[in-house]
Length: 377
Ligand SMILES: *Cc1c(COP(=O)(O)O)cnc(C)c1O
Image 1 (spheres, rainbow, N blue to C red):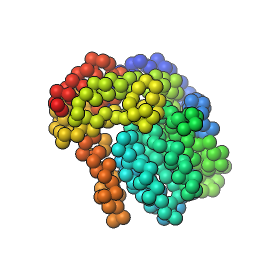
Image 2 (cartoon, rainbow, N blue to C red):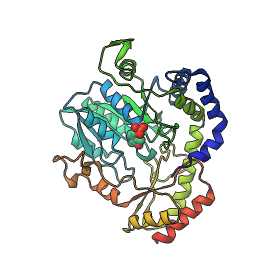
Image 3 (cartoon, rainbow, N blue to C red):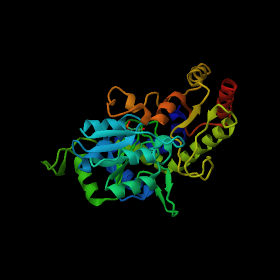
Image 4 (spheres, protein in one colour):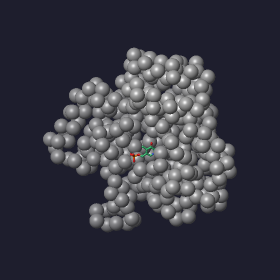
């Protein structure tokens, strides 16, 4: 699904230099490269504060702790996402409220979101799924009306832009009160282990969260709040510092591959290709989608057979996600009715994700698309 070796070969010198710098100084924890990467990322995102941490799941947890959410507070998020989002809500003894997603973008459905709001609702967690930014204009409007926090789970869409109706653009993850991301190796900006970060423009919230990531300490050995230990280590920061200047090119390479897939595969009546919210079709100018995944829907009931067929032909592919969160044992709840989730219940039966990375060439793309069309039609 990804070609991390191929990508490493292209950036070997820069990455190795960064890593050697850490090894030669033994500044493994909180070394200069962590601060340099933090500053570089703040500049790239146009955000006041980046708080590096150990992974994307911690980032979500720390954001919710920083906002002071308390037991019983309801937090609304999408039913169709990776489980980390709902996991931290449940871990903090908040009440997860899962809602259906939009059939076109697979992101949180705005009508379902509105319906789910109660007097106990405190926060909304839009997930920018597969690399496409959720409908933030509508999410912000609802949040303002009901006085709710917005926490963007941006683990899959770092580098994506969101364009508001008035033409202003903001980077994904910098739009709500707080945004979180993951630097897991297969993410669009991945390190060579685990890593994550939190973004905010709110000075006070940034201060609170900087203490939380460090055992609740604001002065050494004085623990003002209950915190966690969540750090991005210097080696990973070194890898990320070397890769960040290439992120826009990486996103461009992914978008080019997505364009190729879309053109080739949209000819089939049994395939629904990904659409963007901005203009419907994917084109070079759509910067609201950075294709963490390229995900199709197979509508003639052959999705599972295609999955097996492609594996037999040596083409990696995956089902993201095979089970809706409201149907997972850990998150099932009598509050949920199947009729509330028509879109996710359909997606889990039809979606399939194809190889998507920065090193795909036309020969590979031609082989993949031809194999799919021969089988599906
Ligand atoms: C990867 C991912 C996470 C978790 O990130 P980790 O670094 O693996 O903890 C959270 N949310 C979404 C949507 C993700 O894709």
